[in-house]
Amino acid sequence: MRKFAAALAAAATLYSFAAGAQAYPERTITVVVPFSAGGPTDTVTRLVAEAMSKDLGQQIIVENVGGAGGTLGAGRVAQADPDGYSLLLHHIGMATSATLYRKLAYDTLNSFEYVGLVTEVPMTIVGRKDLEPTDLKGLVDYAKANKDTVTVANAGIGAASHLCGMLFMSAIGTPLVTVPYKGTGPAMTDLLGGQVDIMCDQSTNTTKQIQGGTIKAYAVTSAERLDVLPDVPTTTEAGLPEVQVGIWHGLYAPKGTPAEVTERLSKSLQVALKDPNVVARFAELGTKPSSEADATPAALKARLEGEIARWKPIIEAAGQYAD
Ligand code: MLT
View 1 (spheres, rainbow, N blue to C red):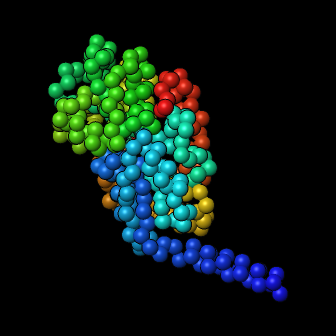
View 2: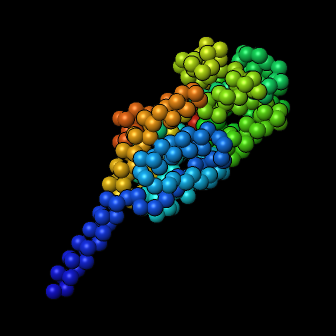
């Protein structure tokens, strides 16, 4: 009799779980952005969250948890309940932090479930409006001549801006003074105010400023020029082919989130990435949504694994680690 009761209880639990997963989502979902509000990761997330909310019929709120190059926010979601109501939208930093940080509050490949890739954003090497150099070669010469005073803003070790800055400094063979922020939103404020000299930041945060002439643009890190910034050369054209990087973004859930939930989220992400407003806004900011095939758990898993392996030797050669 006891065995039957136990089996019945287990079946009831399984049913309620499955029913819960089928009814998902039943309440507000939180997506953590591991950087300050107003930066590129925040911009991408809010556009996608708005479109996913429409598809899912539930409110999605964005919570900014900045610090330590995105690893604080990632750690927050790694510890969250795996019920589908806490998500993380993070970028290439998920892969680079696995090497940069010798102690992380999570296991990059075992603390998350995958939903899908979201977008891949080019970076732009930019400077404050009154910075002397007018082209990338001039900037390199200026940086070498003033290496103890030129300041490079980034969003902390593990950020995309940190990675691109590291590639730039490695390419020119000159370490520069770095100024970390909790996101390149606040870093942009200081660049506009002239408190910091240069930054390598995502086009989703710099395109409007460059078009408005409020900051200087030296190059884009993509293989081709951007339609929205046709006069800005690629780093390869401008003589720094080593500085080529695309900032891919992925949507994650805590390990243990049911597959039915991550699959439902992946389907919603695919719908959101075709939303006309998302497509148009991404295009205005120099990027485009990931394809339907890439907005899947398998594609994100493969990208993260491949990128950890790709960046490990590059980071080790640069010798930049977080203590
Ligand atoms: C980065 O540098 O990783 C991002 O631009 C930070 C941010 O989104 O604020």
